[in-house]
Image 1 (cartoon, rainbow, N blue to C red):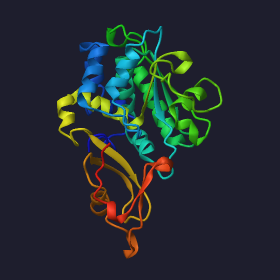
Image 2 (cartoon, one colour; image 1 turned 180 degrees about the vertical axis):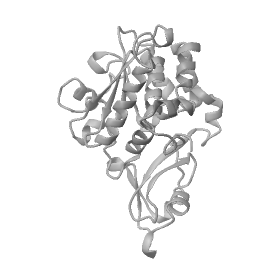
Image 3 (cartoon, rainbow, N blue to C red; image 1 turned 135 degrees about the horizontal axis):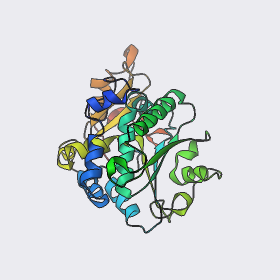
Image 4 (tube, rainbow, N blue to C red; image 1 turned 120 degrees about the vertical axis):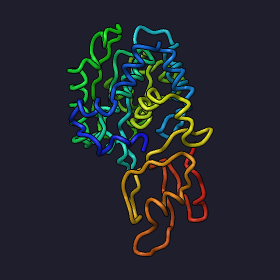
Amino acid sequence: RVILNNCGCYDPESIEEYIARGGYRAYVKAIRNYTYEEVCNIVEKSGLRGRSGGGYPTGLKWKQALNTVASSRYLVCNAKESDPGAFTDRTMLESDPHRLVEGIAIASYAIGANNAIVFFRNGSEHARIILQKAIEKARDFGIIGHNIFSSGYNLDIIIRKEPGAFVCGEETALISTLEGKRGMPQLKPPYPVTAGLFGKPTVINNVETLMNVPVIMHNGPEWFRTLGTEKSPGTKVFAVAGKGRMTGVVEVEMGTTIKSILEDIADGIREGKKLKAIQIGGASGSFITPGNLDITVDY
């Protein structure tokens, strides 16, 4: 476990327990010892790519927003997770909300944003309440707010609920929704990193991408590259649902075969039936047939 290593190991409503497990150290280290650009460089060097499916290099995206001249910038955490049968974000938020708050805080600092928004899925009420409590506790402890740890950096994090349409998970539709407009995808360019929310540079990362950030800052980019493959470092979290003997949230290293997930983790197909196909990647994904199970998890 890398991203999931805190899940089930501490009370998600206790910031003290998270801090006792080493929480927020990476964030304090970032704002005290590194410039915005240096944090972007560390994440770029780690090879972290967007975990939403697009796979765009995270550090590069942050740099593009940072280098765009503007009076303000925004960080948006996309917690929409609208694919049928997907529950990884919800699981992470319900069991380790402070890791996400820390990831958002580091990412916001890296791009020079003073405002961060969590775009939340409609219906995940329990996860939303737990995350809201985590944000309030972080504010009480001075982790977010004004002049954080005398660094001169200010940050506020708020939660916004989506209107309930599948398309609002797409980043330009998401921005339209936050601006109070109809959630309709827009043509690119301009990309959100140069002209996003209210025309300002906006970085949109999903929950899993941001959960990786504190680990990279704490252990270093070289350590992160020891996981996974050369072009796809790190791990990937999956929701395993359907006719497998085991269902739930699993984390595997990039480079693991689909066959390994099916046979070693899900323990095969239940009731002795044969596999027809594995559907991966939600509504815009595709089917993997029994003859293609040696495909590896990577970009």
